[in-house]
Image: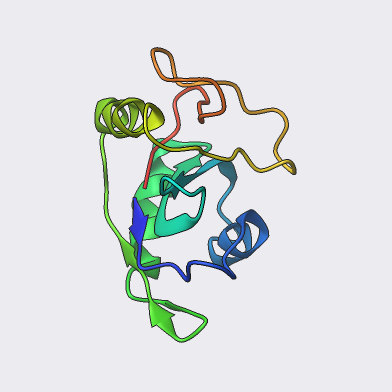
Length: 118
């Protein structure tokens, strides 16, 4: 889970660049009731060891804002997305059309086999 991201300027390309050379396979932006970014994003990596490596970017800057990166279990990601889906709109980045869904979560969420989440 990433927190503290700039509300308006942060996008999937910027997140992918932040974690380069790690392979990001899923990005899910949390939205408020008016479809605006909340500054919280779930990121999935190709492998769980890449997710562990992503912790090195904790407290990095994006647009002069410190971001927080913390480990989160896949089940917790599903619960957060499911809980918020009834009251908010979410976006799946168009540059990642290969994303499917997290089993048990609403359409437009992230999933990939064996990856780790942050």
